[in-house]
Image 1 (cartoon, rainbow, N blue to C red):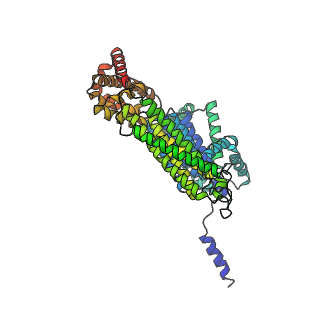
Image 2 (image 1 turned 60 degrees about the vertical axis):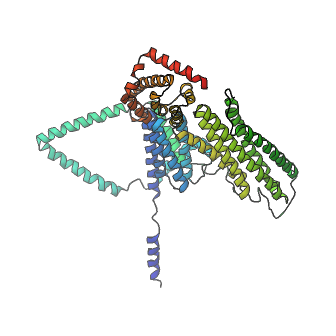
Image 3 (image 1 turned 180 degrees about the vertical axis):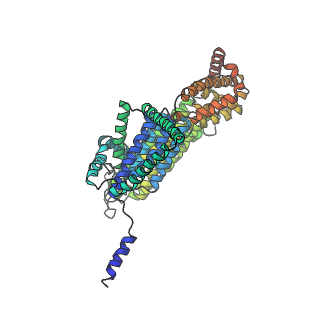
Length: 536
């Protein structure tokens, strides 16, 4: 029996998972930090545009997960990684400063998940703040511990590498010297390689701002890998237990129950009356010429969206705390469900008003923002309903609503807004509805949007056709200037939308070359603008 104990212990050790030596973890972290420094240098300091930043947001998470002392995250980590990948594609297509800010926030969220934190929106900002303040503390801690370790690589390992290499170099040199022709060839090769190395060193010799970037990157990277703050400001049980719902077995009448009940009854009556007016006056109606579209469909939709957001706050404030312990709670909940249905009908009315405005004179960036914002408000209201049904806490609600807002911002940042907006406008114009042409003349359009305007060079309306041809000529001239500028830069300035637009314009030069003359071009654009303004 005693003789079998060593065998059992040996078997247990053999079946145990292999442990990574602490020094290897430190080496991996140091290499990850070094890689982030190099990456930041190439894409930020030596970069010229959004393609380089796209590479930063793809490669930085890979280095973070490789250098992380402990890797956590699971599905959430994969979701954030996928969001960063989609964002990088959007940056390469047609980048913007808002996308860069979003990429930085997602990278911070990725690092939070790696250390076991939930990336709540407020916590992302706090984590970034603390990382800037205490970033290098974790990095310096294990840098100081290196001198107490056994060394990065054991001496025997060094000898296994150094001795054979020295022998090969020594004998190889002798063999080369024994053959004059080979010695001359290799000598010339070595001279060219030496000169190339020195030229590269001279070209990439760092400057003072570059040193500061290296230090800042190392500081931030250390903070992301080993943050001092690992707890959420919402580190509470998100399920409403005694703290929020109270012990429902102990019934007690809430002091404000009657006030809340009367408030809900009044709101139900008010919303019912307004919804009847809304559906009677704006649904199935042919609008006369001169109808105040901006007031009803634009400003009106904004006010109704605000009303729905306020309803979200009111419903959340009523059904919490002492009210949840009141024995009359079922009656209050029935009133809440009735009002919730009315709020959803109000949301449908807001979407209808937005549709009226879009039907009047087409799509714009801000109408896309309005649709996404309205959708975020509706989702926020549904989260309140979910909170009430499942007894969730207030922290749970706030975090999910902020996630909803962040998701709406992310969707707007990554979709090709101008391309989608003007694809819709072009289809309507080519079908004979010329009103959306005003959106081409009064709003800036990026390369992705200009790319879809080409069908309008065959529009039946003279002012629109010639105006678009002049706009394409103007963009072709500007595109040539940008192309020459980027030829002197590197890959970090690449933008796919700019490249595709320039190639398409060059391939269809016959459609716009008559407006290379600046006077004719300006006259055609001004005529188009004046003509389309009738639908503004």
